[in-house]
Every structure is written in C-alpha cells, then in structure tokens.
Image (cartoon, rainbow, N blue to C red; front, side, top):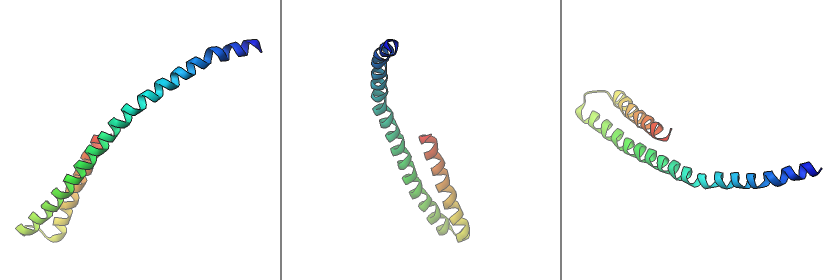
Length: 89
C-alpha cells in the first residue's frame, strides 16, 4: 500500500504539468484554424461572384446554350471549392 501511495505522489505533478502544457497549446491551434476557415470562406464567396459573371458573360456572348453556361458556372464553383479545401486541409 505504501508503494502505491508513493507512485501516486510522484505521478500527480507530472499529470498536472502535462495537462497545463496541453491546454496552453490549444488557443494557438484554434486561432490558426479560424484563420484557415475565414480564408476558405472568402475564397468561396469570391468564387460565387466569379461564377455568376462567367454565366452572364457566356449568355451575353451567345456562344453556348443555357445548359452549357450552367455547366461552366458549376465548374467554376467546383474549382473554388477545391481551392477552399486546399486552404483548410
């Protein structure tokens, strides 16, 4: 029993120290992750506007059918989503 008490006394400060170190690292990671999410969101918002302009330009030029213009818009948005994923991950 005495041996077990001695081990607990030696281990308790180590556990406290480890938990303090772990919690001090979390705010830095959270801030970095928030910045990544914000950058990703900005890219997606810009991409939406670019996709709208792509479709409007396509329709104004009458170079493709409406379905083809919609597909161009989808492709533009998909490219933006991929850029956002690259930023986040």
